[in-house]
Length: 99
Image 1 (cartoon, rainbow, N blue to C red):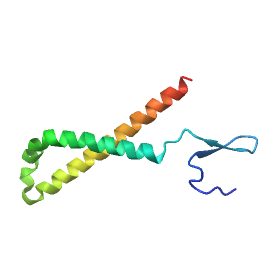
Image 2: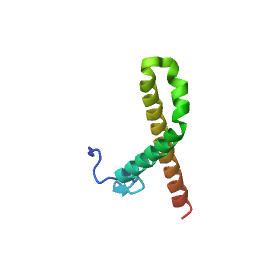
Image 3: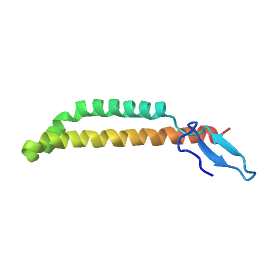
Image 4: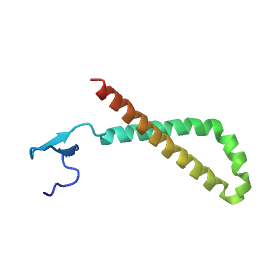
């Protein structure tokens, strides 16, 4: 049977009796955006404190040093975002498993 992707925002779980149930344990878009903004704030604060060290490390790239700094900060933001999402999911899983 065809089920469209997305739907009601929850993932569909087929039970053995042919009924379809909607699970509400998936992460919503607002959570993704919030984790993104928290990760950006963390990297912004870290970048402000570590900026002189970033300049020193990337000086050997001469004209590409600003590009290297941008890539380092972008990578740090993505890793922070991923880390926050993993911690959020782990925390949610532990809260639901204790009930």
